[in-house]
Length: 223
Length: 189
Image (tube, rainbow over all chains, first blue to last red; front, side, top):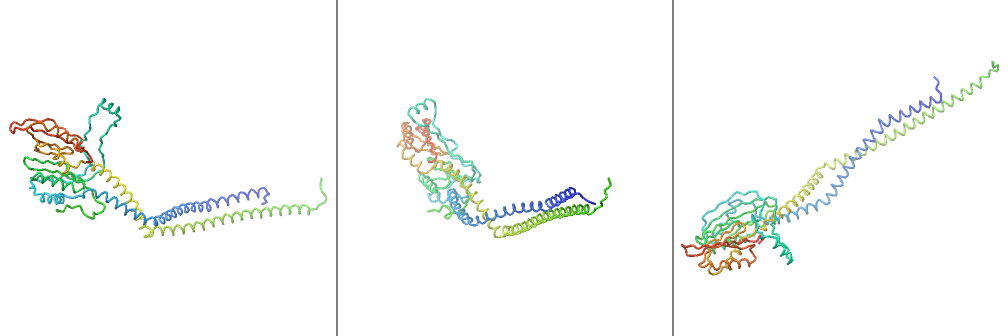
């Protein structure tokens, strides 16, 4: 069978396109896609490696930073009383009462509760009315807003009550010892009855778990 | 009109010339096709080699990244980072709580001393009752003359937000006047 030049050219074009097309779709394109995918994976892994290597350099610094921050934050936490049960708290108070010859009449202990710290239940505020405000304005007196700080964070609180008999001097000395604790143990309520020589002290003990064990645990030692 | 010169050579030559031209074209087409095939094959081969190299590198990197030392380093780094974040959280919370606790009035011997130091001689205490931030001073005196002066003196000390009294009553049985003075201790004192 004889083909004309034009037919031959058409057969050539068809063959050429077929071969090139088949090779592109079945060889080049899959290989290229695979290479692209692998390149992306490789770049990600190399980035990870670079990160790890740079981290390896800063890891020591970071560990040091953690150490420093632990000490700093630990010091802040150490301003709070360490969580303690009633027996441990009793060991703070009883030596003081003994020291000042106070006769213990009653003691009551509450289990620790998780609470929001509150400074005051009632905040005193001076009366305000229009004329006073305007007079103050004329005199250039800035209004004073009494405000107390508020925190929504939680901590532990126990309430412990001691009732004892002793002279006023003894009561004062006990109060003096308590204020020297310099921690987050507050006298929430206290009564001294001069007629019966009976005193009641109710402690609000605010406690937080510690980050760093205290070098000198804040344990009361009778002097 | 019938031709009498039967010179077939001329037509033979022209046919051969066409045939030669056709075979030359065919060779050219085949050449181009084979060249294209070879070029694409070579490119495919290059891609395969590249792929192999990249895969080798990936295998090496995977081996490095999954090695116990690196895993340990990574874990340590992650832990350090998490610890720093937690420490910052603790610091924020603790500062906020301490600010509140620091505002709680402190009822101690200093306040007791101030109440005693400013007491007029005629006033006799019967009870001190401190609750939250208020000290209620219960007293008696033979003549109701000193409560006001005592209240004003306590106000002047500056450690109380307010000092007030609601009055006094005569106790017939004891023959004395009894009253109560309320002192509100300042927050943060």
